[in-house]
Length: 171
Figure 1: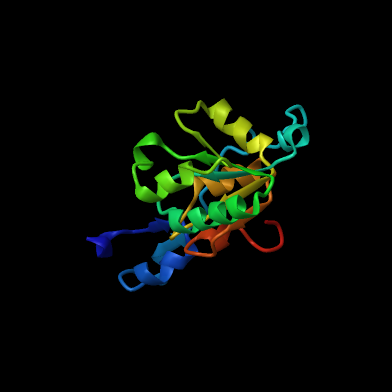
Figure 2: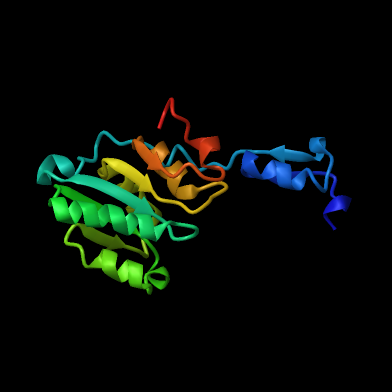
């Protein structure tokens, strides 16, 4: 039972009120999630792809609690306006078997990635111009933290724990 815990660590300040219904406030501690910011870091050695092909490279990473419906809308707008943009979709293969992912995949502006090494994942972040994460909810979010650590400007849905990591003064 939760009431027997000496301490509960949460990864998003937004979930503290829920747990404080069951535990004393001092027993619920928010510790921010993190990534290896020595590994995930900007690189001056890797050339941004947009400087060579003229496209804005927008990376989207992950599948858990992602808002693919909104992402489909963004891709549709880019398609209709024929914008010079390339969406780098880092989504596991097992998570792509939906009608929404199929419609996203029909766009000439979308490139899918999966089964990446850590170095391959970092290279996509480093070669992109912007991180776009459409979310349904989140606590700690690796995609958000990895992109930020690589120096990307961020557009992220303001839900759950996103505000703990992405504040208006630096994302």
